[in-house]
Image (tube, rainbow, N blue to C red):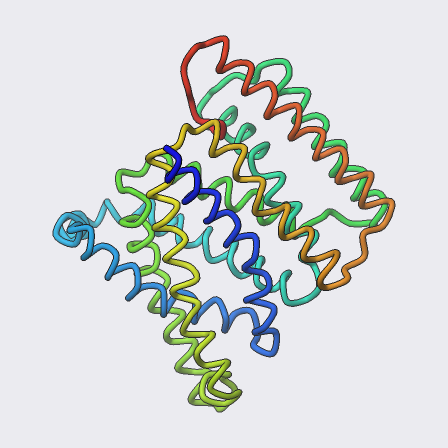
Length: 297
């Protein structure tokens, strides 16, 4: 289990540090970064599948049109999530992006209640109420909804909900999603290159290599996560997942100097308190039940 914990924690650290990677590509528009991320991720994921001996199984699944339907939906949600995240990251909104991933476990609880008919326990309800209070406070102070955080939390929550009931594992499912996303993104990159507006081949070899490296930066952490998730209790994973948004938050404030006002501190504090209540309640509930169950429904 020790190797699993190290792998999972390492993945969350990598995801938490990714804002630095994307920020280095700040001269490239977010839609173009996302398109390169898709195009270069697909061959990496196919190589991972080949190494796992799963290509034949996936090809058999891909022959059934009905098998594509959930992954068309998840590909759309993943596109929204990645595009919003990349735009926020490279336009000075890393703090609000981190808030979205802090909120994600609580959004998962709400979605499980609405779509899977799971009942909220009293302290889970209190955690959701605290998070809602924090969002309302931020909205009143800024005059608008924290749309970046909400878009990231809701899109990733819905993505996880659909993937929860889908038949394929993480790498196989990502392969179908990337295949769905590949054709429009490849067409977009070809159009950008044809019109002379594309970054690839125009901003220097370093930028080209980093755009190509987006595939490795996407696929390899996912493979490591799949390795760790099979060897670590879900409760432990649920606690480790906060490493990523915490690092994003610290990078935003201390490396890139994003403003963290008193209003943001109060709003974030409600959400951090909600996460503390939710995590503690879940840990105690599992101890009472005497068995490990997923922290995120």
